[in-house]
Amino acid sequence: MLKQKELPVAFVSFKSRLEAAQAAETQQHVNPLSLVTRYAPEPTETIWSNLAIPFYRLAAYKLGVFIAAFLLTVFFTIPVTAVQGIVQFEKIEKWFPPARAVQLIPGLSSVVTGYLPSMILNGFIYLIPFAMLGMASFEGCISKSQTEIKACNMVFYFLLGNVFFLSILSGSLLHQIGESFTHPKDIPSRLASAVSAQSDFFITYILTNGMSGFSFEVLQFGLLTWHFLKAHTVGHSDEPYLYGFPYYRVVPIASLAVLIGMVYAVVSPLLLPILVIYFLLGYAVFINQMEDVYEITYDTCGQYWPTIHHYIFLSVTLMQTTMIGLFGLKSKPGASFATIPLLVLNIMFNEYCKVRFLPTFQCRPIQICKDNDDLDKTEREAECSSEHAVRAYTPPWMRPTGSSPESSSVQPLVRCLL
Image 1 (spheres, one colour):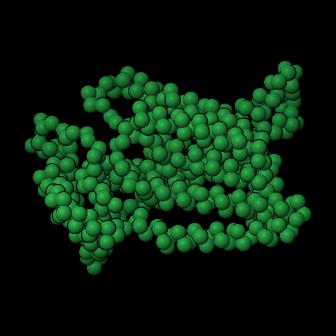
Image 2 (cartoon, one colour; image 1 turned 180 degrees about the vertical axis):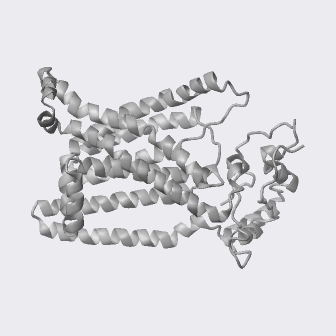
Image 3 (cartoon, rainbow, N blue to C red; image 1 turned 90 degrees about the vertical axis):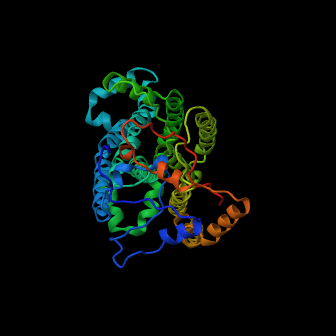
């Protein structure tokens, strides 16, 4: 007896990779919404509940998730602006005179204006990746890897807007945004001036993120808290859940650190050795986490590379734009104009990468598929029988009642020979 009804989708297995690639990357019907074909995710990362979502509804779901993420980003400007107000302690003294009592204790003023804002900001940001992952799960992705990649992009742009731009533009945010729109040619100089004024804050931010972020990662404080609450509300589960590496949380934070390092390599080179220590510490921590803590729950097959390339492109673009404005502030127009070709070359190289490398991540090369099929015939290997595919892609509720669940193996159904 089945627990739920069948879904209006089907998993089709082919005898060769070549046939599968041709079927997945061609239009099967005059109306593309009548029969949609795409590569099936691995059974271990398939989100079964999203398979029944009609294809024409996905656009509405994406729009809803985008609006929700945008509203979260906008509302998060309130605590970020409040945190930046702590940095500008002289303004707080004018608005709230009793705050001058902080200066009566030696050293307390430096702690309040230096370390406290970064600590509060990191505390707020710690919850954002989980919120973005929850939003991305409503977008209708059929695999966990697609959901986490979308959450990764949402978290990165959230950090870029709230941590970087809002931090350097705080104080007179609306005025500076209005001036940038009315005088767009002054954007590089305004950006360079704002970046230079916040160098101390970002140095403290990197230090605080390194000490608190990596400490929380080693202790797994959030996971321990979640298991404690779950055990006292829902109860213990007999089936252990494998926790994969949180790319959606680690990649955006590391990419933001790279962006800050590139931008401040010209403005404040003192940040670079601190950033090197930050990455060395992060390397030591996450090597241990990958080997002893996290499990490989699925394989993205390198799908994060285009995402990280885009982050690096934005970082280099911001660095070069800041250089143009910085040289202009230093009254060196020759150096400022000499930097413009670098910005143009950077944009041209990014467009070249989109044409040369991006299609490889979006489509399966027919030549590689044929070579892999020939190699299978040479080795006389049957990669997966039809019975194995049927068992692997059977939803939990489609199995007969009382049947034992499949093994939680994370090995791919088809061996990758690319």
